Image 1 (tube, rainbow, N blue to C red):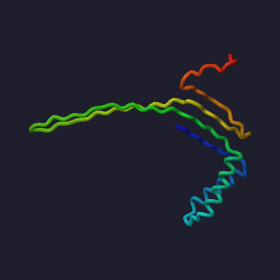
Image 2: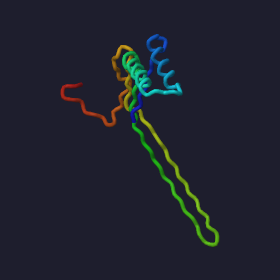
Image 3: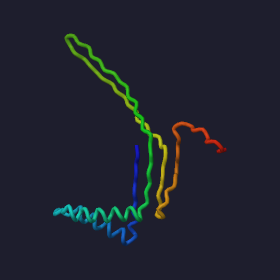
Image 4: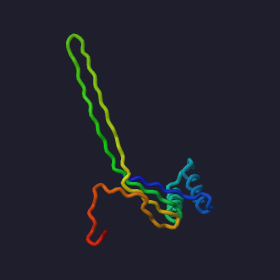
Length: 120
């Protein structure tokens, strides 16, 4: 599973204006698609140019088991039981700062990889 967050510094006047214009347009009951597209594009541009991004990749697992049964005769009785467990394991996390540079925060390999020839 991939999860991505983008943040925009609203203390910057240009960013704040883009965010306000977007919110005003979305909250307008007389919504016009052309206007919404314009403010959406402006906000997307600010997010691309000035936003910070955190991206994470997870391995997700689910285990489930259970059973059911019933007894019939003059009186019918039945029941069921199910249990499931979900797990997530962070495999990688990346961060893009205001300078536009990506850094790897965490990297978890699924299987150990042998060193390439010449590597320590």
